[in-house]
Length: 237
Ligand SMILES: O=C(CO)[C@H](O)[C@H](O)COP(=O)(O)O
Ligand SMILES: [Fe+2]
Image (tube, rainbow, N blue to C red; front, side, top):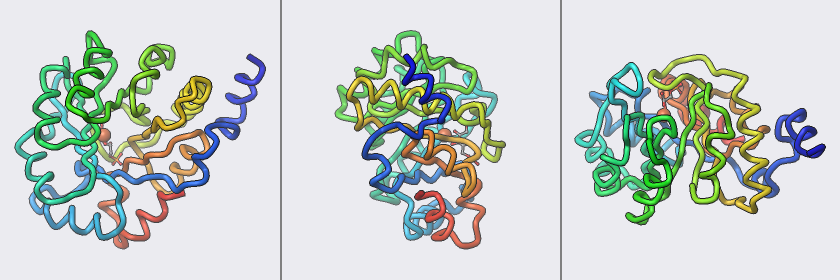
């Protein structure tokens, strides 16, 4: 208990042995690119050193925005061999897992708040041989995701309220990253990724990394950068 309190105070300094040995991964959020020119945007960000392609699927119900769905992700799959990191911001996501797995997503992340039975969604993703991510909004307590840490392959901590790119990073989410990393370490699950998404740039990434995150999603910062290689590099802290 004392250790846990110290850990929270220090915001993750003592967390996850080994993660600091490797650079963090950068997942480029295509929501921030010019969608009319998506193939060349993908090629450019790939050349700049991005590790994954992050695809934000929004249904206009779970979040107040509609983005894109299977037709666009099929084109993304054809345009690149990079791992596809699909972020489902849709209600009752189990309805669409077969589709997003079938089109070639590597990681499929859904929202805990949107799923009546989160374990069933994780199991369905695994039944396709894909990696399962579970995400929480900034207002959702870490205790709600704890039951799924034993089986999820990735936890996505939203660092903005989901729905739109270009928002400001919420610092209060850092404590949640540290708490989740501590819980995963305590369970011996040190291969589980913690991904952060929303307002990630060269400054905010440092705090996320210290707290224990290892996959950094970035849209507006990366695609808005003049020098994309330098921007990607700045996120690999
Ligand atoms: O899931 C998301 C929004 O809900 C996006 O991935 C995220 O906002 C990335 O955009 P930016 O880096 O511009 O904040
Ligand atoms: Fe996202």
